[in-house]
Image (tube, rainbow over the protein chains, first blue to last red):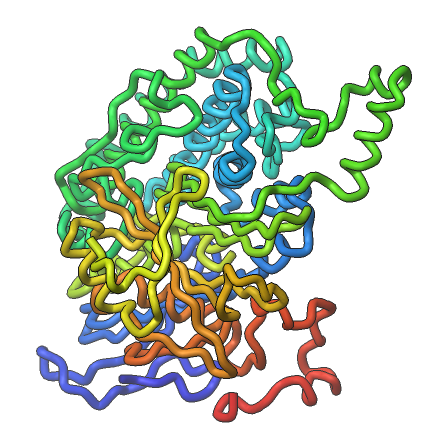
Length: 408
Length: 161
């Protein structure tokens, strides 16, 4: 195995003979390579231009989120969960909130469940839009970025309207959501849902039959279904290999069983297949949004439990009990019964899980995020083997690893 | 299913099914479960029960394996306890390939040594890092500024780490 013996060395000779009469070269990719979607470093062994070995080096975005969670109270932890997969904060919030609720045995009201679905699907759309924009940009479809970010901006505005934040919303919390949807939000969402299918047609016009896009993705980065399963891949990586596994369908959470949608699957097993899956998922997300918006139930958006969520502002002026609850919640927080729970939700990248261990106090003993990117990235070598080095860009792109999610 | 002789304790917490087994038999148990249909290792991690001396936690480190049967939609959490100054457990990377990185991460964060792992090196922290950050006795505080004088006393050379 080649070694990179001193910093700054980007190419080493391995001394190993390649199939074309030359020597195998070790080339360093990243961590600041613009197409690695963050700071992914790859040590690639090349025979001519063919990839023979790939060794991902990760950890450049490690922020110690799991350690931080141990020092924060249960309700404070939500803010940190936003930040590991920074392209899908509400979905991360949802996994954490569901895990805490599972351990506490709390069931949120129907309106909160529907709002959680709305936020999850908006996030899935925005995450796929970023993916499509940047991957298009890397493979030569420059205008994709402009089109995709145009619609992503609308989703950011929706986030701002409902939660006050554009990216790290912290909207979904244990016990419900931050606040009810405003009439303006519902109006904006309605317009967005009406316009979005037309925009997805536009993206398809730009990419689906685009000869350059097809040449760069069809047959590239093949991952057969059996390999995808063995390597534990989830999300579009698995569905792009023809396996119809979607947690929203298979193990529904937050009321997904009551929505009518299809699981996007493609049997192509290559980069193009993963692209088709994501396009289909965007269309399905719009369908779910429409159903959630039309059938949005009335009622409260938080559990009626003063031990878990603060009392309404107006009660504080008249009720001594409300003041005590308010004080207790903001000084020591609530406790979660001892035990452990695991909840998995489907993010834009695959299975985003949260495993929590409580010792019965007001802070978690351990919080583990099972991130889809971390596991999916292990399939990189399998996908890149014997491809040209330039195809690496397409393969990293369609694997859609978010490095914040990989390193946590 | 896991042979009854190997199960120390089993139960259900918050709708999650779990079984505790002894660390020596972990490969045997996981192979049996895989043959049984639990073919996806959802995650593998460790929990540090440093100050908890309750009988529920016989040793300091709890290794957790979450397995899923994609056909029957069933999940099981296999738990095992290990202790000591240099905790060791057998690697399961050949039974479940995704365990490869997860075991490296657990080694990096908790210092659990997985025997027969093909390349047990740090994965998230720098190669020359000292200590295992997710242990509960690892100090939380400011990080020493790199290339400063204090940094010298904190860090050891890569070959000694």
